[in-house]
Image (cartoon, rainbow, N blue to C red):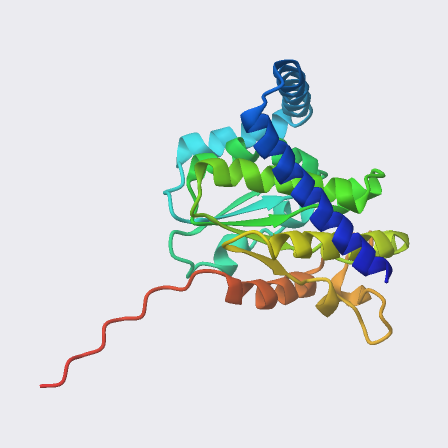
Length: 255
């Protein structure tokens, strides 16, 4: 019953956001719009300052070799950043994959940097993993949903055909006390994605649980937060079917 109420709350939030957007199109409140834009600009500048070193490293990588359009961008927190074999693991993905994970980041950070870390590469698909740091900092599942909706809107505004894939929040042993909020976050974002065309929710949460319903310890390092090679092999097996595949070679015509 609780999850049903949460899903309804998520849909209500989405409808309210769409309604507010429609109303603002007809009855723009200039003072409210200006205030919101100013707040967003402040948040963006603060985040740029906080993540200066990581953003500079991405800029240097782009100067050395700017990724071709049409690939797949992986963006998110340290789980993405520490996937050192990402490009080898998905070497057959047409257009290649781009790793834009930055450790410790939140889904809120990802929404602020949607243009910097996703849109500029013109990908055909975006893989997002973030949200558990938001919850650890005290945000609610609906606040995490709001950040994801902002991220998705920012991407779709400039890349209307890009596929958006959300990798569910994982059940880390060090954050086991947050598992009710993690399940709720996954639930509401999944409900939101059901309403968003050309998008998908990838459940990594369930396969990372053992038969006892608790996180599988062998998938995690000693810090009980980041993953072992075995954890990444599991992720690869779950995510690979959701990525583009190379075109089939032409069949030889019969003589």
